[in-house]
Each structure stands twice: as C-alpha cells, then as structure tokens.
Image (cartoon, rainbow, N blue to C red; front, side, top):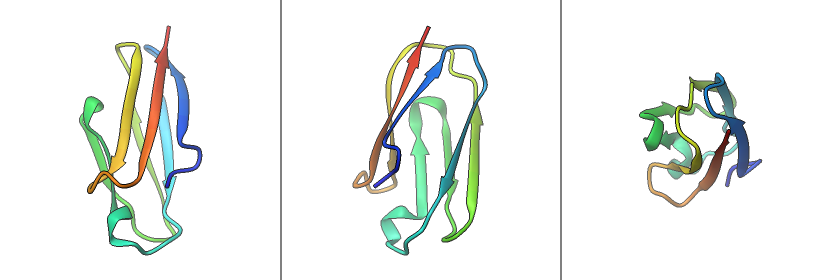
Length: 77
C-alpha cells in the first residue's frame, strides 16, 4: 500500500505529493486521484510528483488503477 496512507493538507494551498514505487506489482503502476482529476504512471524506483490546489474540504481517496492500494487525502480549512 501507500506510506503514509493518510495525508492532511490545507484547502487553497498548493499540494505536491511525491510517489516512489518500490515494488513491481502491476497494480501499483498507476496512482489515481479522481476527485482532483490527477493520475500518474509510477515507474519502479522513480519519484513522481503530483501537484494540485485543493479547493474543497473533505476526505478524498487515492488508489491504484485496480483499487487494491488505497490512501486518503484529508483537506482541511
């Protein structure tokens, strides 16, 4: 899964999430943040940043393309 699997950020502030894939399971090739219209290919051993500015508060999931690896982004005021 993702480590950390819960990330807390502030509404209206730029966010940069760095993903480093350390294994080779095909499920982990892509990370998706559908509520922020972001996704990225994750080559093994490379750090891949995803940047955005959250405009609403709440809890939002990020997952692999199969939904097996899951994490949560909490956006606070």
